[in-house]
Length: 114
Image (tube, rainbow, N blue to C red; front, top):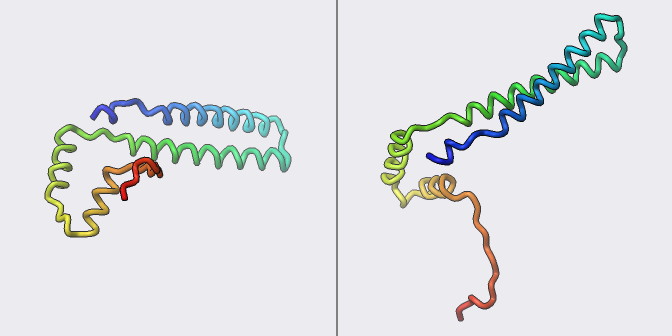
């Protein structure tokens, strides 16, 4: 529950980057209004539009992932994990995928038993 409460720092950074792209797009639009249009202008406008779309998608994904679960939802989900049949390879893999993030293996020769 405490982990969920941590603020997502990615979204503010993406929003700032989106603002910069939108500002650049506005500047490009002003340049086009003044008649400054050439292949480079068009290419830059297309690239900025693509960046804007990409940033909007990334922000949406981050916000979806940031949904907060209630204590009751977490308890319910964990109680269902207790009921898993551990004879099933699928359920074993599910538990590992859920609870194990990283495993370090060290070869410590002083710890070997013969």
